[in-house]
Length: 372
Length: 266
Image (tube, one colour):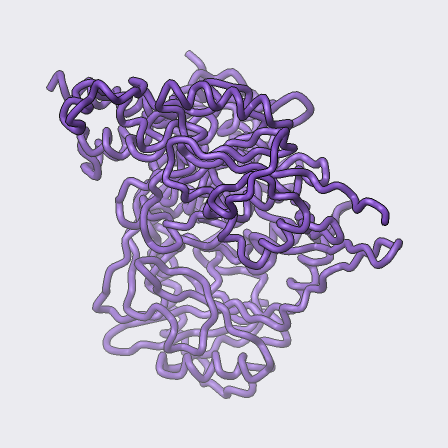
């Protein structure tokens, strides 16, 4: 992919790029600033992007503020992940109904059409690649996920600013997007100029760029963009020491620190809900009052709920400490055994969106420490 | 003429309460006719003055026990009911009137009534389950209509109602709401509260009031300490936060007393 040409275009033409995608039949989905946060929703075009907004994040804290730099992508991770479009928080799988003496089963179709994700960051691409592995490979392929995934056009955006809860460099997922996109953008503002660099990652991306006929980026442009990425990589707000971490966590079952985390953890499940790779779900049956039909719904679940580990007789993970341990050791340790890579992409959402500011990097560090 | 299939009989009972939960049944609107077709509404004074004699297959009980008379009457209701479901915060935890549990009732009586000697009331407001065996509890102030239909449907078909014992946050995040605590630093009881409302208040940008009461094992201490530490809550506010519709629910009661005691010491 490195062989592909890198183009540049003035920031005022971002709308042309998005319109070009929309004209190819894709519904645009991307970041919008709403009620104090950047969330993912429908985009009408470039004007809907959260231009001039910047976030400040700390454990248990997220604030959006105006920035005089007036960039399109100065913010980092918001509370939403792209999983909400590929694995909806709630979706009917099938309906069963009595027709006379016969019971019929009707599968509900996936008809989301062609969709474009605009502004996918490097850590989020890593999360999508992980979901592809979970739902698209092995013995348990999910047709609904795959149908939605096949209809995506992905516009990645390289991060030129790191947040205080970011640690993608620790997880080797960013800040530069390396694969898994149709187009990748880098926003550059320098000396009065405001432009984007763009490169394609697929032939679909090539075709779009051909049609837009942007000029080629100069070596000076490319240097500017590279410097911004290097700077972002150096300014990560957090760090996770991953060397030997899966092994250390795997042997940490009785570590006293789990109890100290349990004393703080609310077991509210916010961390799992905002995590871009947490994929656990459950099914619920909703029978109609008259008993003539029923619907099976799939919805997001979490290892932090009491029902999650309910087997005959009760929950096997009663204590909050055991639930947090399950989550963290799965995410950072047994996930590697299961899916060949860490379940954490270093986006920092679980840190910012924990109502009581529990920081996975700090807790993993404590758990990883030798017992004295 | 052959006898039509016998529908199970439904009775609705009121104890100390505001009637809002029984109203949820009438509020079913679209589903009300289906409910009326599926059960024989035998005793429901808010809907009809026609009362059929018991026993009843399904009793919905609203309200808490606040008088010696009601403490007797609930035994009668239990004896008349094959399956008894309590509905709402009053019936399941004592309701907002359980604030009396933290005060001196005799003192109230002497202020409110010209002749307190005519008033027979208990010192506490307590949930139905403190007095008789309850088969199922439906929480909320008021209860959620979908949950009520879920329970009636499950009852009709011999299934177990599925009302997950999870936090309000799970519904809140499924709906895509950014967390109010994180975004605005306001104490939102969602992380401690039993799901059931579908995160109604946070969806309208208001922190959760906790009207469905505590979820199993709520970490009230960590929550409050975090808010106190960040200045988003004072101790008197913490007492009030936990003393609303579910003031008498053990986890909330303990937490409010903890801060009251520390107020007294400071």
